[in-house]
Image (tube, rainbow over all chains, first blue to last red):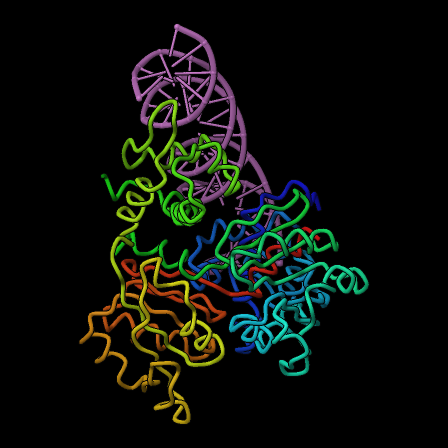
Length: 205
Length: 205
DNA sequence: TAGATTGTTAATCGATTAACAATC
DNA sequence: TAGATTGTTAATCGATTAACAATC
């Protein structure tokens, strides 16, 4: 409801709830409780109830939540009750893996183009896609009104391409390059860097 | 110093600082300030000083931080001043991409084995590695004293293999499967799920 | 020295938890 | 009805920020 007032940390948890709920639905379950959800995702029941209650009253005292209904609501809230076209920039190993990944379709995303700046790669096929030239990136992204990009390029060129993506109207970037990207305030970035993630655990070993 | 008392949220930021510092070092820079680091990584200068000061006094008033020295200290703190052997479980596209990724070596990690449960994949080569049978996972991991694993399997088998990894003594798991893993308290998990990460941004579109 | 920047304190801000009335 | 579980409040806990003395 009051979209601007929801803390980002709550938004980051909703996709995890959604994923768990979809798994329960796949297993044929019909209802769940904040307690059961919490056990599954490793979050306290109180926090799950609090998070969900920011957006409405989706549960029933005594019986908990209807899984299908809560899935619908979370998909609405997260705006994944529709399909988003997504591009991949960088046709290396990671770009290939993402291009072939089967897990996007049922979670709201549809890869539609792949770009690279390597003349040897441009024109080659990845599945149904033909690798396109990053020289045409801005034009192509604008024309197709793409809002989401996944960036799987070396760190050295990532910021330059990011600037192009922003210029083309992209508002969400999933960054696989091992570098902090700088973007305007209205553009969101999520970072995936396996070495960084591993380094968050070695401290405890 | 008081290792147990450092909040995890600070630990999660240190690898980001380290990455930025290594980049500055690569660019030939010798010193930096909390302000400059903050600008690069998108975090306030005050927070960076506070985070770093949890571990000692590594800066100098008036001049800031020696980049090389701070890199050394962060590497020590994060225990990546050494090389960690890492295994990959799951030889699909993502497993292949990680096996070929060149970014681990200079950040403290060394992939040493790859496993899969698919009879058609076992015995095949990925670069220098031969894909091994997950049936031998526990034995092999114990013998090599492996503490870190990257999991790139379908969600359906991820928890089962996780239990095996834990049994074999693995204490840190980088999980690419789209499912929340349940592990004992002394085992760390980091989740990488591109669809989840994308869903954290669509809310704002 | 003057200017710059740290390390640290105290204040502020925000998130989590515990508890329970409401109610299915 | 009795039992279960939500939604919400208030209390607790923790993280961030602002400010500045110390000092290079």
